[in-house]
Length: 343
Image (tube, rainbow, N blue to C red; front, side, top):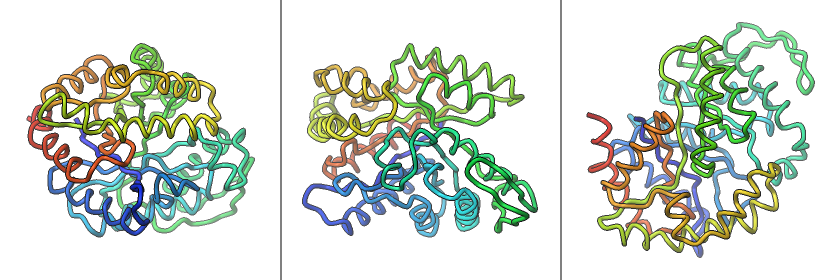
């Protein structure tokens, strides 16, 4: 199993933006020293109260220069918001700087706020995403690119550099809606899924993904990474109580911000249900907060029920867990959880 740490370069209450960068870079250094496989970077815009990670490709480059072993992945680059040729160039550049320690995670986001800020109609997000991905794949594979599409037209351009990894970095697509699973399966790409979606719904959607993936000609075990908030402590009581305020703050943020800007009604309704749930239900259904042995059992459950091959752990859910507690959680995961899956 691939063990990934998700970060959105959160902003703590009362802290400066400079401190937000320093803290997150420090946490990434800790993660590499502790043996984590990948650090995954979010993309946020126009949310000063939440995060400073507006440029994940720039941050990925900085991480590559600061580290020696850990991989850096995007979770995710929002493709419809920018020029796909620029994305192809920058991703290939990061791939070279990192000497192939780069994963190209992509999606289109469910938040209309980002699209409104960039003056891109959200109703075009899917078609823009698919066209952008097509262009990027062509740019990496072909010496010269000509494309005539709905949103972009290019004539005989040569994208340089080509990726370090051949033919290109691993491409992973975030999926959420029911119809997205088979669509991405038909493309043959690995996926991100979210623990926000109910277990039974995930089973059904993953079955559709696997069916289309097999039809695409892809071989081997389907590569499925699940994103979920994770917190580990020495006792169950500590694991539940220490991140409580931060987790509830994250949920409240979802109520006041995400629901208002979520284009997908399913996402909005899911967040309403989460917001109305007691903390005990959040612990049961939304997060993995527990002792090392409890987290091992839950990860094994994900493997058995859903066939996941990686976890993208949101290790500071809500961004307000004290830094010493976050580091303690990372140490416990590294020392007592990861060895159960790395033998």
